[in-house]
Image (cartoon, rainbow, N blue to C red; front, side, top):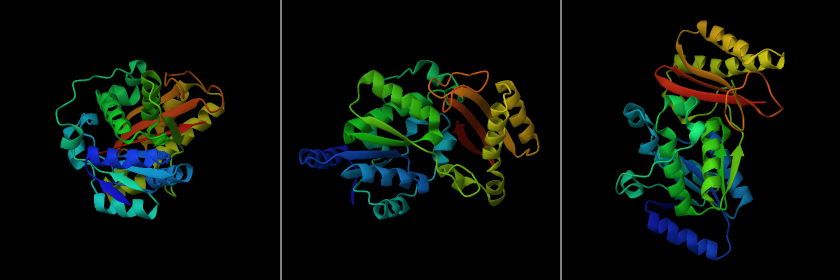
Length: 280
């Protein structure tokens, strides 16, 4: 497995591989890898000659400096996991390498960034769009793999690829969960033992809302069920719960066509912000 820290050496190596006819599957990450990330790498390796993973904690997508400071960084452990998964190339640049100067470009994703994550994390998707664009230009993959836990991020990236005509296929992949239902996330490592025991209540709340909607109730009723559920667990601070159209992420009043109803949630627990969703 090759590990590169600069854009130039990464591009030089990958261009030579592509001239030789090899296809590239790409998994962009911020590190602190878990089994969910590894499943994306394994899928990329299965579907392409080369699997490339980037590890970069992107400062421009954090609107909370304290969150950026606390984000776990485990590069050595990450590389060990990636090598075992068959990853061919790791691109692990510094912030100075990615941003010699602060980008002046601003990306506006319209209504996609005014709801849920965009509403509560102003500037977040501008940072996501810029860094993913830069990574696509460095790696030039045929396919890029993203987990659906970050549902809104996937929607934003698909829109960006469409609008800017990036020559890459976006492959959304199912959320990987722990045995108790908690969505795998790098942030889970920051939870205390007590908080980790409570954390699966987020997934339970989503399933209660799903059941409510499947019984024919309204989105407002589902929101009431979620609110009531968390009243029994005061350690949580619910930031939002939304019933949305999977494609547009616009709010909807009740369940719609199969596979198009998205339940999205964000909550703080033990000072850690956790997100999750169900699409049904």
